[in-house]
Amino acid sequence: MNFSMSEIVGLVILAIIVFGPDKLPELARKAARVLAYLRRIGNDARGQLRKELGPEFDDIHLGDLNPKTLVAKHLLSSEEVADLRQIRDEALAEGALVKDALGASDDAKSGASAEADAPIVPFDPEAT
Image (cartoon, rainbow, N blue to C red; front, side, top):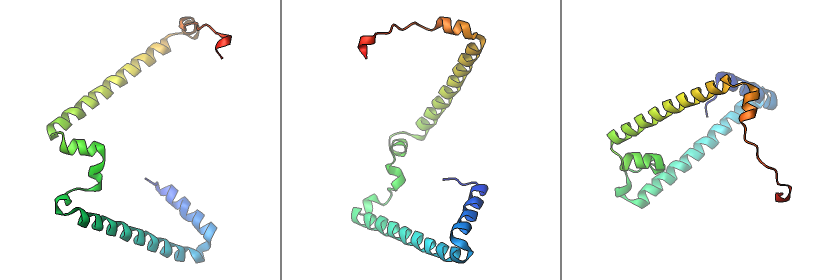
């Protein structure tokens, strides 16, 4: 999550209004303790998992389990990844050109001719 400076200032002002300036430092200390405790639990679980898996799994990180990074890291060479990124960028550029061309052709048509080109779909009252 990315917060802008104005959002952070707004949250601080709201916290001061809701909790008051006297209780706010105490609540901030408690929140920091809870976050430190949760981080410690996560690190302990990660260390225990590494210990249980053994030394052959030392180079595995949780981010490596993401399918995108797993394929890019273990199945494709860096040249293939660069080629795929180039193909993606070219496809996005072509798609933008097509979108612009379609938008320009839609702007050129008048409202009446666009309605005349629309296909007429028969209505079947028994189908509903």
